[in-house]
Length: 258
Image 1 (tube, helix red, strand yellow):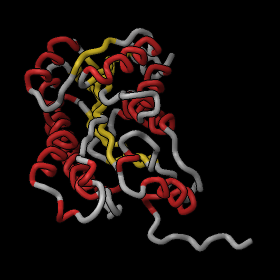
Image 2 (cartoon, one colour; image 1 turned 60 degrees about the vertical axis):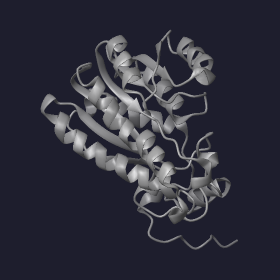
Image 3 (cartoon, rainbow, N blue to C red; image 1 turned 30 degrees about the horizontal axis):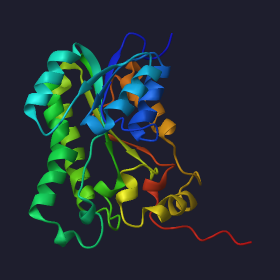
Image 4 (cartoon, rainbow, N blue to C red; image 1 turned 180 degrees about the vertical axis):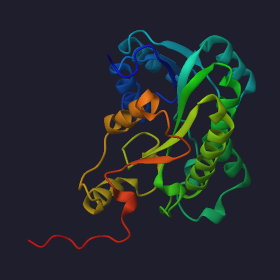
């Protein structure tokens, strides 16, 4: 029996086959989950529907997390679910370089609304759709707790997201609903490439990490399978790192001598 047989999981953020959300959806489907995918805007709808066909004809619904009307419509259509994946973030490109004190008030508000508050909004609108014992997963990054140059306001938003995970875990815990975050190492996606200097990050992380490698979207997906399954029934309010151990390093190791 597959780990997720009989479970329905809603996945946000499947923009293309290289996105982290796509890797998560693929692994959830491989373990038997019925998927619901969401999209925001006509620009990505076709790509998401193509993915849905690959995942056993997953249902596809529009979801604009900045619109309460859109979230209400999603809740009305989704039916009963056993969890959802929050893989949503947005920061203006000009706020992903330079000094954080140059962030505009508008840029800050937009980043916090879409990258952090959206988790709270989704949980609030979907709480009656969630079955008892469901699992909520949010994608975060090390820049929420450590300084990552140029990540700037995105890191501040991730810190808010991780705090939201803990408070939602408390509020929903009485129903056995678990809320966790997954912190992936640097993976080349359309979003990550917007961060100034990103191209050098994967090599540096692989060289410094205990496992001496980078992670893939399937690695992240495997952890999502665990968190969505009953194997993690007592795991909540935490951040789970999928970064080959990089987050634990306190100093870069000396380069190996030839």
